[in-house]
Length: 177
Image (cartoon, helix red, strand yellow):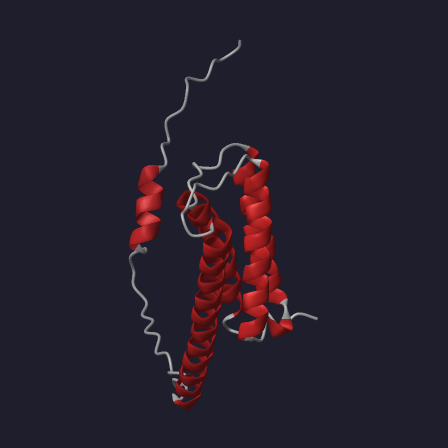
């Protein structure tokens, strides 16, 4: 069973994980000297982002920071693999480009997971506050409706407008003798 119906931040968390997965993959690809991904790789990255977003929004433990780090890390590894298929090459960097990129990915994934977890907690706290305020507001009493009816010797205005809008003319009647 999923927790998406009871967790007010589930959709927000899933959307954030999906967007962050795609944005980090494309940004790191560009920072490493690669160009804009083209063709099927864009569709595959979008599918990866949607899949990870759906997992993050329906998984019970996805509100924990370490689970978010795992999801975002898996997204970065899979995104890197997709971009490598497209011909992703690393630019030359004087300080071991693999280690620098790995550290950059780890920092980005950790910061992203902390931000998403913080946003999840903030959304849950705001939902609790709004729910408690909504429960304290007294219901609006059902008012008594007073309908005023009076009789008149003239028809209603709407009946008069309908009667005048209908044409009584028609085509001539042919008389057969």
